[in-house]
Every structure is written in C-alpha cells, then in structure tokens.
Length: 507
Image (cartoon, rainbow, N blue to C red; front, top):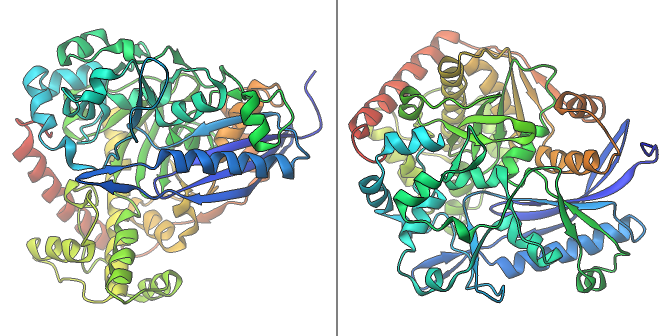
C-alpha cells in the first residue's frame, strides 16, 4: 500500500563549486525540499595537477546526512547521490583509493584527443557512442593516464557519485546515466561498447556492473550510521547520478514538446528523446546523446554557462574590485543589448583565469566593441548565453526532427530573471523558469518512486512538480530582428570554426 504520510529522503547533490544535502519530504501529493547542509567544493592543485578534494566532499556528505537525520527525527527513508560527470576515482585490489581524483579542467588531457583519433576516428567514435567532443571526456582522461603507476595498480574505477556511494554502503556499481558520459557506452543498447574499449585499449573490467535509476544501491554501513546518528537500516537508491539526468527529471513539463536548459556552471541545452541521434550532422554540430532516466536520451549541447560570469567575478575580486552580483544584473538590464557578444560554446573559455581579458579579446577579434565595465561584461555574458541557448534549441530540433513549443530553464540560472527573459527573447519561445533545485528534486523523486511513495512514469513525477513548486513565466519580447542578426553573426563564426576542425580531432 502506498504510504500517505510524506517520507523523508536525503538528496545529495554535488556540484563543481559546492555540495548540498537536501531533505525532501515526499508523498503522493506532497513534495517539499529544503537545504540542510551546504559545503564548499574547492579543487586543490598539487604540483601541476588539479585535483578534487574528494575526502572533504565525503566529510560534507556525512555532515549533511547527520543534519538531514536530525531534521527528520533520526530516520531517513532513503539516500541518493548525484554529481557532475566524467571524473572518477581509482581503487586498488583492497578497495583503497589511489590518490585524489583529477579535475576535468586539468591540462593532462591536452593532446589526448589526437591520440584517440589515431586509434578510432572521430566519426566512428561518435557513431558508436553518440557523445559530443569535449576534451575532458573520460576516454581522453584514461588515455592520458595510460602508463601511470595509479592506472597500472587500479583494479576498480568508480565515477564520483558511485565512489561516494561505495564508501557509504560498501557496494560498488556504475550508474548508467553517468556511465554514458565516459564515451564508452552505446546509447542504443545502453551497455558498454566493447569495440570502442578494445580499439582504445581500455579495460572495461575496471568498471563494476551497470545500474539504472531506481535500482537498490545497498544500505548505509554500521560505521556510517554511527557517524551520522541515523537509525538503520537506511537504504540507498540509484538515482540519475549525473546531475543533469536528475535535473531533467525535475523539469515540470506538461508534454514532450519542450526544450530544457539546465543552468549553472554549465548550460546543458537540448531535448528529451526516446532514441539517440547518431548522424554525421549531429556530430558536426557537437551534440551529445547522454542517457536519461526511464530509457530516455538527453540530446543536448554543452555551453560554458554561468561559469563565464563566475570567472569574471573571481577575477575582479582577485584584482581588488569585488562586485555585487545583484547590482551587476540590475545594471545589465539597462545596458545596451547585443553590443558585444561571444560564442559561449567556444572551448577557449574552458580553463580558469583571466576571463574578462579573454572575453574582451574575443570581442575584438570579431570586430565588436570590447566590454569595459563590469556591467558591460555582465550584459555581454548574458546576451551571449541567450544566443547560445537559442542556437542549441534550434539545432536540436532540426537535427532530431522534434519540435519544442516551450523552453524550461532549471537549475541556478532559473533565479536569474534577466537571463530567463533574454532566453525567451532570443528563442522566440515562452520560458518557464524553475525549479532551481531541479537536480535534488529529480533525485528525491526517483528515490520516492523506488520506495513506493509515488508511482507512475516521468509525466506523473512532473505533474507533482508543477503542483508543488514555484515557477515563473517569461514571454518573448524585444527586437526580434536584432536577435536574428546577432545569431547569424555568432552562428557564422561558430560554423567557420567547425569547418576548420572538421577533418581533425575536435569536430
């Protein structure tokens, strides 16, 4: 029998700059979420290598579970974990971690794409896995790590959320939505591609068995219960452990004719499909086919996202001129539109440091006015993101043959009213903004469904979101012709760059 009293679930949501543990109370008609613990995620550079401080993250998770238990009266109905993609930890034969995981923004993958292309041409790799080229994809990390003592000693590879889950339960598995970001999974069969692994010399035996959202992931170990003060048993459930997979579950759509933009450090913009798009045109457009919950495919393009503005803020603070974000956004709303724009998908913006200078240089190369003030930089970033959102939504529709009548913006960017309005203006489509905590909500909903607290497929889960979560609506406005002209200018530059790379390894 389905319980009528809301049940407490802990949703662990690890992001590139911070981690959160959220307490969700879920019932058939109830979905309440609140943050009980937040902790920083500060990468650490040792020598020339940028690492994740994964033990600090694990400590944050334990502290958060303790806080969630205290708020829920000492007992949780379940725990689920999602995080960013592509990165992993290596374990030895005893299960001990072989060093801190390396950050995807580390430069160790420089040149790895060329090595991979020599073994498996980009066209063949995309036809087999459907994953867009990103220089930090797991296959490039593994090729870059070849010959290192750590990889030689490794007997197990765990993606970041699977590693945390292993420490909490003692049980190892590889969650499928995150596994699909390794560029080793066939999106048609939703299993590993032995052909790709063999061609690249990657041992699939390093990966524990694949698991799907909704599968059991063990129970919290006695020592974890003692550390957190929780009363056992506390089950863990496999959720969409790639945070975007959980975030797409958290899109409050009413049908299937929608586009989504999961915004934060990255903007992940695209469509939810029932089958992958593996055409050469899709590869040339740099779209990815990541696996989603309930057999879906997340057909999307990675865009730099609010990382551009975050890095500008960091640069200004380091230079002794810290800025107030609210004041910048207010000023940007009154600034001249589309005066200076850049290609927000340009990999030149991937690495940290000197972001205002790099944005100004990109504008100068395009023959556009260079932003001079923080307000002008902020408007440049937001206009550029809106244009990138437009391009991704239009391209996804053209390449997949699907149409979208609404754009849903979820994640942290849903709070950015100017970005939401600019996206509506750029796309010419109505925008529904919210929920901001879509990843944690999607995480909790998959747990609750597995526990029998709610039932049904994604439409039922999304109906519960619409009934319980605050949403904001934005209709297109502004000068349509100006957006068209700016989009043509950016698209032309991006097309030229793609054509220059098409026969290389980066297309």
